[in-house]
Length: 281
Image (cartoon, rainbow, N blue to C red; front, side):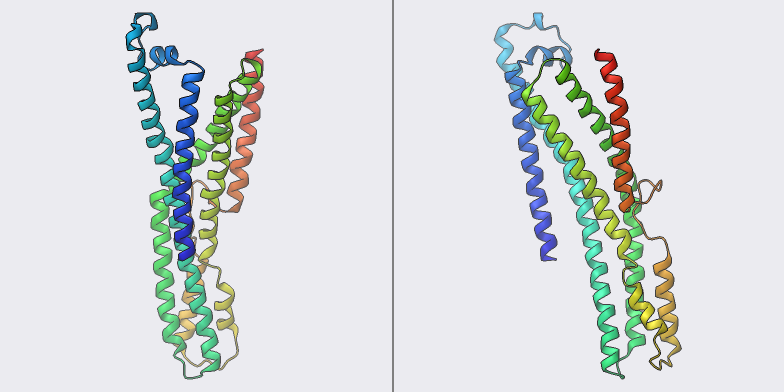
């Protein structure tokens, strides 16, 4: 749990660093590239020639506030939800690891102490395992739509950043816009591994102690308790059920989902690059 707390603390710290960095980049890009006219005409939908020069500082201040609020609410908010999702997955994974440790300790104690009430203890662990599996299914019901939206936004963001890069190579190069695109690309890749990786660990956690339970089931240790046999069979049946995190129930968020999403990014980005080059040429 201490390690999990440190991960959560450093993740939140990283979110604030990312948000502040994007605010600085957007601010520098706004002033260095002189995007005041673009902001007035695109965001305020007012002809720039109708704005008196005395209002330029006021509009610049409004634009700066818009940049800060947008980055905190959009970039910061989305990053915070991702951190919560990853933290919940890792927390449940820790719970299953604790269950694995307790099950292994029960088996070891039963070998050393023949009077150890193994059937009673295995029954308690079976109930705890069932509750953990139920929590995972509820979490999937809460986050499955968000996971699908995240994966979709990752593919869309990769295509948008590829288009931005092509525009800067074919037209005028803009340093701060280029740095922003590079940061967004790294952010997208990192988010993909965090979201899908933490979910993949949780998908594998509920059956990670199958070998320990099988050892109880097939061991010739003179077990005469029918209750123990039933409890072990119940645990094995629970481990055979589909307890997983999904992306809107379309596909399972296991290790292969990382490669699938990355492959989709590469496919669509290549199509965008070909189309964008033809249009710009």
